[in-house]
Length: 145
Image (cartoon, one colour):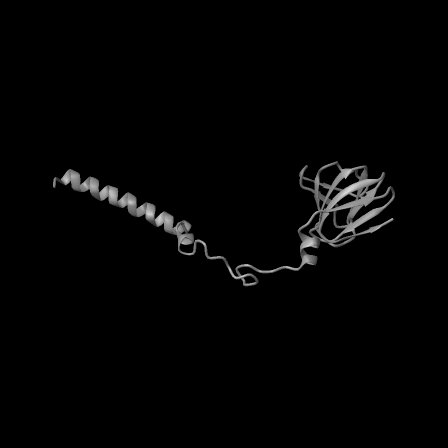
């Protein structure tokens, strides 16, 4: 075998070795050994949650808020105003995080339709309905007429 062919074979081997190292680092092939084997329900690999937790923290709940009503949300709650007009209810520590617009909405400022709002703290923040409103809410909240 000539030196040129040997050098080419060595270079090809190095490339294959490098690709194998990348594949191992990324975990390729790790699922092949257990393909078809499902985790045991309730185990740490497949935990169970209660329906109450699911309803409160995962599902979006449609809330009809009458004019003059107020919704107060807990930390981490998400709110989308789908219909009607409402203003923000903030706290001395800040307003509502409008992640759609990338801004903070202060108390008394109007809330835009279909914008995702995140409540950062459990300190009385929420929305005050100016007209009858329809909201989608994920997370713990309370309403007052």
